[in-house]
Amino acid sequence: MATAATSSSPRRGSAAGYLAIDPSVRHGQSNQSPILWDDALFASAETLWAEAKDQGLRHGWAQSSLDGFRVGGMLTLSRSSEVLTALELREKDREMRWLVPRTSRCRA
Image (cartoon, rainbow, N blue to C red; front, side, top):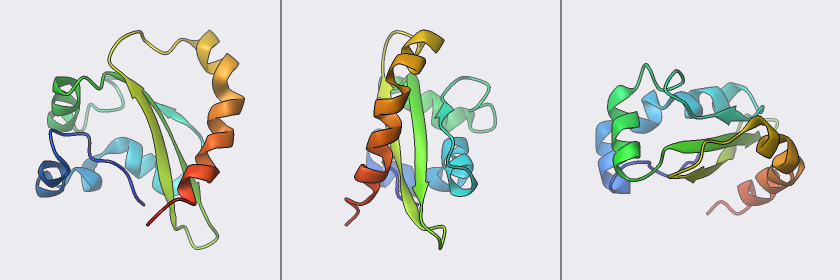
């Protein structure tokens, strides 16, 4: 599963083992339904969540795209302000889900 590090640098995220503890990544490894970032989601990874917030990542949406071998990627859309509302998610759901498999095919 490929994802971008949510710390001050990709090396910092790798050194801290964030891929192994990121709850959005764990969710995406077994489930292709979208997931919203919030304090409850990151309760088990408080240091990761604190570092993400320090970098301005406070609100996000993530969804994985997996093939038949459970290999794939994850698209994460995030922003620093304005909580993602239920109305906004309903209005943009179709476009975000359309984007997920297309960006997963762009893996290196």
